[in-house]
Amino acid sequence: MPTMAAIAVEYPGPAYALTLRKIEKPRAGAGEILIKVAAAGVNRADLLQAMGLYPPPPGAPLMLGLEVAGEIAELGDGVVRHKVGDKVCALLAGGGYAQYAAAPAACVLALPKGVGLIEGAALPEAYFTVWTNLIDTARLKPGESVLIHGGSSGIGTAAIQLCAARGQTVFATAGSVVKCAACRSLGAHAINYRTEDFVQTVLEATGGKGADVILDMVGGDYIERNFHAAALGGRIVNIAFQSGMRATVNFTPMLRKRLTFSATTLRPRTNAEKGAIRDALLRDVWPLIEAGKIKPVIDSAFPLADAGAAHARMAGGEHIGKILLLS
Ligand SMILES: NC(=O)c1ccc[n+]([C@@H]2O[C@H](COP(=O)([O-])OP(=O)(O)OC[C@H]3O[C@@H](n4cnc5c(N)ncnc54)[C@H](OP(=O)(O)O)[C@@H]3O)[C@@H](O)[C@H]2O)c1
Image 1 (cartoon, rainbow, N blue to C red):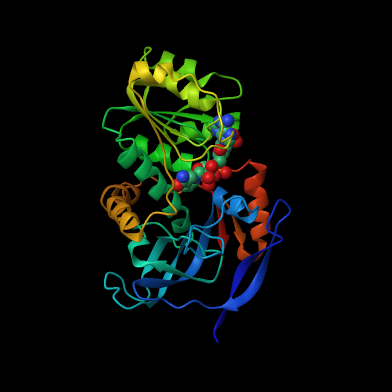
Image 2: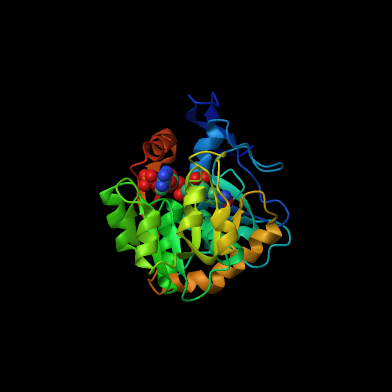
């Protein structure tokens, strides 16, 4: 039985540990592509899953790892769009913290020209999430303004760049001077939420109008504050509620401004739904990367065996952009 190295979660819960194990190497099933992983992205969701707070959706692999980049090692039955040896990145429902990962063909993208095998692992989770939330859910239109919370995160650095490259006015919140400088260098008006009130700054900068679209991963008291920072007809989309799943909210500004408030998750969507996002990324985002208008923002890279140190780096909250694991 062919084996490979992969990361296992020991003692799932607040004191979890990540250890390298030998396990059976996966095969490409029908409609799947087996990727020899060069690098995997670390996501906040991986930390939550290891702590036992974010179980994988039914049918998803139990192993950590929502995105990889590498070379195609094997094609499953019915896969025609790629060939063995192609350099690709892929969105996974799990299993990326390993030397090989099987991905649904609908979630596999050829790497954009100019992007290397390692940096490619920084793209899928961030751009699938940002695209579908800003464009599909929030219906962001040309010329509109956007407020992105968590601007220095993996998701935030992608959202700022996508919006800036499309010519939108971008505001981003972050919690330090260094993180604000990073957001500014990517094209955002940065707001240090520890020293400034983002509602006041956005309203002042837009002549009292507010932001047309808000992408939020904070929740808690930000829910009501987002209503105040939003423009008439504004659309707010939450992808996480890091400050708390419960809030007491005054909905008056939502009524008065005819706001839309939504929340979404990417991981449990069907392969057909993810495939539609994949096609939009290839059409509208990959050309911006190939033109140098969007670049993967990589904070740090750790050997796969040091996955625990990579998680500690993310838990510490000092990172800017993506943290990667090298297989
Ligand atoms: N729903 C979905 O489908 C989906 C998909 C992908 C990711 N997500 C979520 O999106 C978030 C980002 O993911 P990631 O992997 O990019 O993680 P990450 O890099 O660790 O980002 C977390 C960010 O939250 C920011 N933050 C925390 N409290 C804040 C506050 N009060 N105001 C502004 N920013 C605040 C942190 O920045 P500061 O240090 O500046 O506070 C940090 O940049 C996570 O919560 C993740 O679960 C959801």
